[in-house]
Image (cartoon, rainbow, N blue to C red; front, side, top):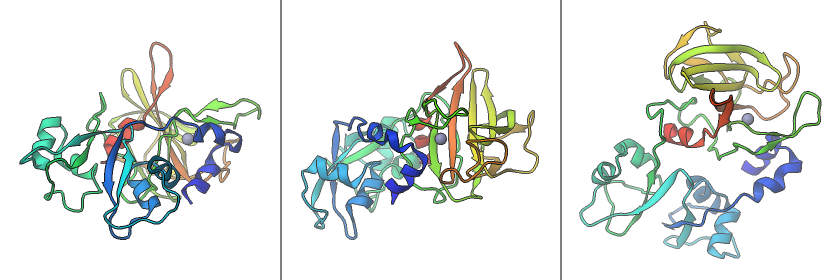
Length: 279
Ligand SMILES: [Zn+2]
């Protein structure tokens, strides 16, 4: 189902490119629990059932409780082994990560108070900036997301150019609340032919956060207005890819991008920031 939805927002011609993305070499170990499926485990590790089968040399989808599987380290985590007498609190101190984020990064642990020597756990990677950012959609209101930055997208005004995707797409139903990830000033609001109803927030001298495809703005949201981190700014939609008012050309989602002003105006990969904020 996840793959089917992804096809709706990606150019089918470029799917080969997406599936050919390099598979991370480093791997950690996971013990199969009751009611687990390859798909469920895949969502916990930002991977797919097919990649899990390949990594483990499995020929069928059936799993046994207690079975050990190799799981990839996604780019937003590193793996670490639990030391003698360790607690999650001690590990959080050692790696300079807030304890709630460390616990949230390890949903595979049924009880974070019950860890043992040698157990492999995940340490979330801190981004270099915006550590106190707020994920733009509330927990539980969006579909687990992967890194869609720099994927090729085919839509352009004249119908010819293939563009690199300048952000990450987060799938959520129409009308889901969107919050400002950081405080700043709205420098652009209104329609653009790619992003539909979009909002651009300047968060510091060199950086703008971009929220696109909104179905509508929150009350009072317009150019020149200051917003705080976590403030409601609009609602998820599927606007864009055409003249003003165009909607429904792709599955409903929030497109989130980060742009730097210098040396020239350019997009950077927002994925690690989003993952950190999501914990
Ligand atoms: Zn997008």
